[in-house]
Every structure is written in C-alpha cells, then in structure tokens.
Amino acid sequence: MTLAGPPDPAIPVWCLSDRRADPQNFTPQDESEAARARRFRRAEDRFDFLHSRAKARSLVASLEGVEESSVILSSFDDDGPEASGIPGLSVSWSRSGPFAAAAASRQLGVAIDIERLLPRDFRPMLAMIATEAERSALDGLGEADALTAFYRLWTAKEAVLKWRGKGLRDGAKSVSLPSEFLCAQSDHTLLIDSYGPVWIRIVASGPEVVCTLAFSGKTPI
Image 1 (cartoon, rainbow, N blue to C red):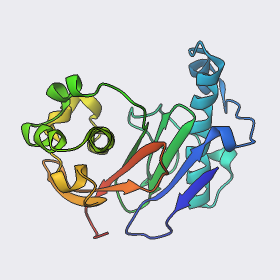
Image 2: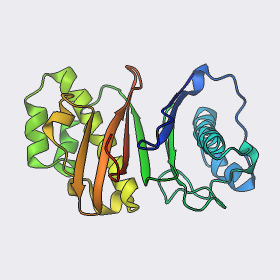
Image 3: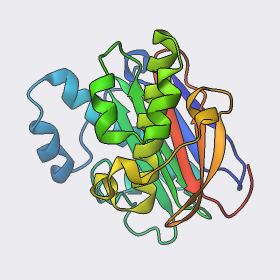
C-alpha cells in the first residue's frame, strides 16, 4: 500500500507506504546501500530500511520525471538527506517498522517523520523532550488521547529538527508546539521558529502510525 499527495506547490509532495502490502522485492541500489543494510541483524529490519530508501527514490523520480535508477540518495535517514545531482531539491524520508514515509519539494525546505502508534510508557520521556506547557497539555488528556498526543509531539519535533538541518543536536525542547496541535484540535500549525517560519502538518496515515511534515513557511497551507 502506498498513499501519496498532493500535487500542490504550496505543500511538499509526500508518500506513505506499508511494506507488508507492497509486493516489490527491495534490493540495495549500490554497494554503499548494501553495506548499510548488512549492519541490520534481522532480515526484517534490512527490508524495512531498503523499503524506505526505495520509496524516497521513487518519490524523487516521480517529481523530477527521471528513472528511479538515476536517483542517488547520498545520505541515510535524517543525516542531511539529499538526492545527488539534483540541486535545489529538498528531500526527507523516515521509517518505523514496515512503514515508510518520504517527502520532497523544489520550492520548500522539507522534513518528515513517522512513528508506529504503539502502547508505551511515554511519560518518563516527557521531562527530556517536552516543555512544561506541552506536559500540561498531555496531563489533561485521557490515556488513549495522551498516547496519540505524545506521538504527535514526537514526530513533529523530529520533523522540525530535521528541517533545521541539525537533527537532535538542537534538542527537542527547543521546539515548542501549541496545545491545539498536540490535542488534535488542529492538524496543522505555523511555528515561528528560531530558524524561520515553519509549517507542521499531520499526514493522514491511518490508525497504526503518526506522520508529520515540517516545511518552510513561505506559502500558506
């Protein structure tokens, strides 16, 4: 299964894919990718990694009108991702288990993050990643809603940190999210970030995952 959307220059193109429903046989594109895949001990993890890379290449190829085989991803996951030889293109990809997400844009700086919505004891993590206002917002929710809010918080902060180009080095608490977004009263919001205005937007992804886009606030949603 692959979802995609939308062909709108104001919003990055994106795709979301579940490897379990995809019949393709994902293989490494080159020796660099093969070497990285061999680091995974479990075959399932290797396939998930290759699946996410393949989906990112496919999205870039579709956007640029080129063959997938010509798209070379020159980095891995959230470490300064780019497509070699395509100047001006912003691309990002993420994976969580069998799920993969990718986003790209010619006009906008873009980042994406996806996480499986799994039961977990997330509250001990909040002291490290959430502001006081964010913790207060989650404390006011029931357990099921608080879990979803945690994943909205996690994916949005990851996406913004990737969008900045700094990754987790900038610290999750440096990103402050409004309670309306965390509590699912709104699926998009504009942050006035220290690196510039950035939109965050939930990607419709079904009940098993939470996926968030972050992209430059040059144009409104």
